[in-house]
Image 1 (spheres, each protein chain N blue to C red):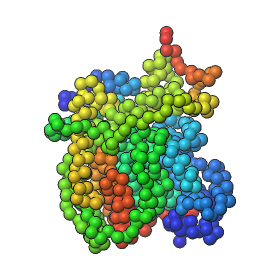
Image 2: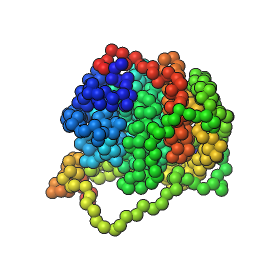
Image 3: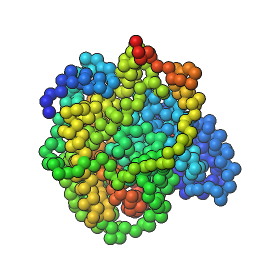
Image 4: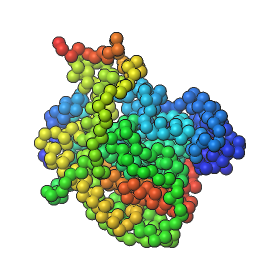
Length: 489
Length: 96
């Protein structure tokens, strides 16, 4: 079995038995990245020199002082700041920006002994469902290089799917971890809002954004969530709640567990293959002892409109800080200060970012605030209540992650509404702030489909337990994409 | 929702500090109109007695003791600034 097919526990075992050193493992990760990057285009920046040096130093740390992720390589989405390593959020406006501190999650990765190998491509400022909105490059789906990897954490999902790294971090505002995880056939978790510090995450929509882990297996995902969770006094929205050991939740037993299956998640627009894959998955879960029942989340159809009003409004405010004065791109063409701002921002931001900034500015402007922004905040209350009501009776809610598998590059880029509809099944979760995972559950025309498992606030444990039982009972996560073959191991 | 005009888009772009050409304004007008029309769906819901949710979890104020703590190192901060002099950021002329 090659290195890239191994789990965290297996890699640790190899290090423990001195079959491989951390320095060698890091070197192999870079070899594989260099072999696959020409095809996949997942990375924006590599951290080779520092990572290689760090790996050598780590080999001398005594085994007794090492945690379960010690010495393992990880890629980080480029909207998470990394001290001394260029961070652009895939935007021209942050070109050349070298952060002078680490995001809290990056501090935690370091504390866990993980080796950050590089920064991963994304849709600009996390706005998009296809990775086509990056200023720098278009990441390809490792299963079919003519299709998109999903967005906005497409680089993070593609890097794991192609075996360039076993772990990555993404961020999820309306489905940006789960949708690319589904498209790339990997495991992606959007934790409860507040579970993970957002300090050092370049904000898109602050009330919805959440960092989360992308991995090849459920257990590895739980291990990574263990490492990055916890209260942070540098983030005032961070939740001061206990962090359990998420791997301890993987008991393999879901006897009597109650699963709600929302009929709205099987509505018009959701493809037959996606529906059938989930129905088959429910049978597997029933065979394992769970009780599945149809439920209704009646306000689901309003989620998309609610999301785009709220997210765009928050984006218009958050992105006002990019003015060319203190960091990043600065225009050459300016007479007055106003022209300086306007030219810098117009040259620095891409079309999708401009579209959302303008939409948000419009929704927040005098005369439209009540009709759009306030209305959307009220509808969010109704959407959240749907989930609260369902969780009175059910332990988890299960449905498809996306309506269809990955689409072709360029196919819908000029049609924002169709593009936005990609996140129709993931967005309600962000509006309610609950946790949800996407795991592989089937294929359509050789492209992966995702199963979405949604839990109660701060109940990632049950989500992981169900995901693990399903993963153990099926083989979808063992299949590997075309890019896997022939690359350096 | 009335039709979104090119002039409205130019006004919104100005508020957002974005310079756009007439051609871009027309392009965005069509797209933003389609998007705002889709958002009209929310008007069919009666939300008269619904409280808005600004945050999904119970939030409390986060306070700390009122004492000075070191900020970012100025020399380090300046490494990301395109033009600076004497520890200060240079900007275009503000007063004419």
